[in-house]
Image (cartoon, rainbow, N blue to C red; front, side, top):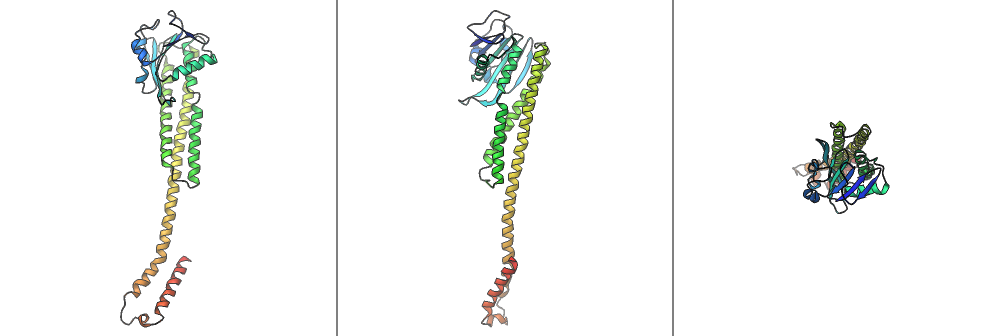
Length: 297
C-alpha cells in the first residue's frame, strides 16, 4: 500500500493521516480484499472496484462518492493489461491497481511536482491527462502503418496485406471503443449529483470529455481509413484478375478459328480436294499462321 498527501503537490506518507486531509491511497486487489476500512473511508472503501474485475471504463455515483473502473488497450512490458478501479470522495482518492501502471503515473506526478491544488478532483484530472498523454502519438503510429500498407498496395505488393491489415483494424476498433467508454464516463462525472466537484473542477472534467471525444474522432477516421485501404486492395486484386481474364480471352479468341480449321479438315470426307493435294498440308499451315496474325492485329 502506498499513501500520498494531496497538497499543492503529492507527498509520500508512511501511514494514513487524520480524517479530513486530502489523501491518495494506492493498493492492489489482494490488499483491498484484506483492508476493511481506512481513516475517512469507513463507509465508502468497500465501493472501490477490484482491478482484477475491471472490464471496461465506467463511473458510478454512490452516496458521497464516485467509483468505477478503467481498462486501457495498453499493456505493461510483461504483457499484463493496464486496468484499475478507483474511488473518489471530496478529499480522498483510492486507486486499486495490479499492473503497477497507476503507481508509475503517480510517481511521475510526484517527480514533476504537478500542481494538484490540494484537490482530489484536480488530481483526478492530472492523472488522466498523463494516462492519455501518449495516445495521440500512438494513433499517429497506427496511421503511419496504414500509409505503409497503402503504399505497398499501390506498388503492387499484395502478398503480405491481410494479416497486418486485420491486426490494425482490430486495434483501431479497440481504441475507438475505449475512447467511447472514457467519454461516456467523463460525461457521467460531469453530472455530479452530490456536488462533489467545485465549478472549476467540473470544467476540467469537461476538458477531459472533449479530449476523449477528439481522440475518438481520430480513431473513427483511422477506422474509415482502414476501410479505404482495404477497398483499394480489393480494387487492385480485381484489376489483376481482369488482366488475367483479358489474356485468357485473347488466347481463346486467337485459337478459336484454328479449332474451326482443325475440325473442318478433320472430317475426311471423300472428294475434299485438299486431301489429295500435295500442297494441302503446307497450305493449312500458312492459313493458320495468317489467321493468328490477323487475330493478333
